[in-house]
Image: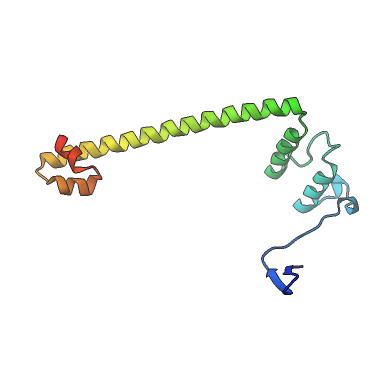
Length: 143
């Protein structure tokens, strides 16, 4: 099956494939599922009635699927609280990453200044020091 431009009758893309799954026609029981594909289809078909996710301990895909199902089953009030907590968590991570990057930039700036001081003490020109450290000539002259 390929996507086609119906006006020009040309193939739109031979890279995209559409697969339709008809879950009611999947009749295997959990113990009959052998491949990862069969296990995923079984899980999707029975997600609304499963007490626990089968095969969760065997495969990270099912652990992630279980997490998604847990969030999807929250009521509106629980979901609002969950989303607020996740936003606060992500904001905290972003602040910590920002502080880390800021500290790194400050460390690199201090390293460049230290190198520039040593180069200047060795008699190198401000232009050459600027070339190798990335500092401005004004900054180098102020050292």
